[in-house]
Length: 298
Image (cartoon, one colour):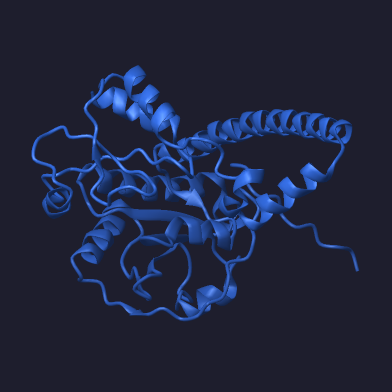
């Protein structure tokens, strides 16, 4: 019976004159007792001027039988009509009375205009549905891109930094200027950071983000983080806890890995994070040696 009852409810969904509902008597025992329910399933119907406890329904319990009973016994007509304006909302009453005041020809013309407009709106809705479904597919692809194997990323903007490090501890590697270290030196330093990142994941360590930037490109931030001792330099930053710690040891795989382990067990001295503003925008490194700046002739 339940499928037929649910189907009946769907037929009158949104009706302001007929309500099809069910009650779980194992939960609402008091309500069922008040309405004289003694066995299950019990069907009762309520007329506008009838008994508050309802009338027992003893007819057919398939969909067709239930639907026929509702159609012939209950008032299923429009909730708003010229002969029942008291059931209309103010807007419905306004439209109905305006329509009634029209000539039959004008009213027929207006009906066709509304039908055409509805059809146009439905077409717009379908077109919009195609658009948002396409956007959902693109959204999934953008989100899937976050699932790629994590590597040490270059910090190119403050937005990059906040997105990468706003929810976790981040280790920032300030690497020597490309003119001082060349591509081979930079790649060696990046390999150290990537190896430590990979090792931390394999060891099941706490999630830590790694980013790098060229030393000297964020001079004011470097000063506030006390990195005046030169590059490469390493600093751990936690924006949520408002703390940071500086690596004071050797910049090699073992030294950086030890710094990360010490950080995770609370052995790295931490300081309140200064308000260092925003990281400046940087150009992505092309993987090549830098070109010396040509001095102008005096």
